[in-house]
Amino acid sequence: MNIKYADRMQKIKPSPIRALMHLVQQPGVISFAGGWPAPESLPMEELKEISKRVIANYGAAALQYSATEGYRPLLEVIAKRMNKFGIDVTADNVMITSGSQQLLDFVGKLFINEGDVVLCESPSYIGALGAFAGYCPKFVDVKMDEDGMNMEHLEECIKANPNAKFIYTIPDFQNPTGRSMSIEKRKTIVALSEKYNIPVVEDNPYYELRFEGERIPPIKSFDKTGMVIYFGSFSKTFCPGLRVGWVCCDPEIRSKFILIKQGADLHTSMLSQLFVYEFLTSYDFDKHVETIKHIYLKRRNAMVDTLEELLPEGFTCTRPQGGMFTWVKLREGLNSEEVFHKTVEQKVAFVPGDAFFPNGGDTNHIRLNYGTMTEAKIIEGITRFANVIKTL
Image 1 (spheres, rainbow, N blue to C red):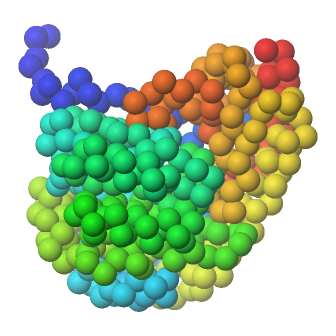
Image 2 (cartoon, one colour; image 1 turned 135 degrees about the vertical axis):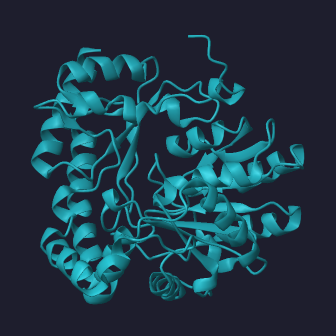
């Protein structure tokens, strides 16, 4: 065929994680690849009850079209929950989306013209890089420290790119490194945003999944001028298959997102929104999240302890205080792609690190998800992985 596609299609690459799906679903494969929550954390019995109640109580309205910005009572519950985390907002600051991944595409559509600069952590979330890439930006990598984005380097990058459109960050249990931004840096990034008039996109799907240490207020909580755009999601704390996320932002920015969503899918599934609303209002959501955190703490310990015990000298890994991922640095000279192919032969999957770097060029890291597999599977999988490392 001689079809003339848009030039932007040249920039859109397949997700490395999605490309692994055919591997991780094979029998016997221990997968540390995707960001899937623990299957046993999904509240099946409650969902059975909710499904009956939604149809009985809402009838045809549960299956109809809805407002683009979302179901108003759900907006109010989310706003109230965000108030608990120090973010002073109302329902008029919130819009429901089909997962926070949809918001990443919306941000690209809202801000990026071809050739515009996007400032982001290096490494950063594959899904965000892929969503932004469709709008043909220039990515400028900002160095990361153990406590998040390096603020001195960020300011240097802003000065070198004064027309940069936004700063993208995952401040809590960052995907892929598991690191969290310190409170001092959160205040600094807001100050830089105001000083240079550049928005901050705070992508925070793991915020509630802290199982160690003191909770740090979101970046948005320090925002007094409306420059911070906060993304949240129920995919990691409730059910990813429902595809319910939200954006919290200044009403002017929200109005732009509403226009974009009208052209994308009109509104998020009303049925999904009602499932989330009923769970939030009829059950103890905080207790449910505590159960998830307990699961992830045990699994993080199983993975990191086994890595530290079995990997040879020259390898390091992060020990996150929450979230779902640890970031492994390989010994110099080892290539993560080569390690991946050898490890898959032993029916263990992970994501090589190069894809997480906005401009590529790193073959010395890998990302492991400790959330999905049981402790026994984690220990077995890391043992296989360590054995491969030793042969290399």
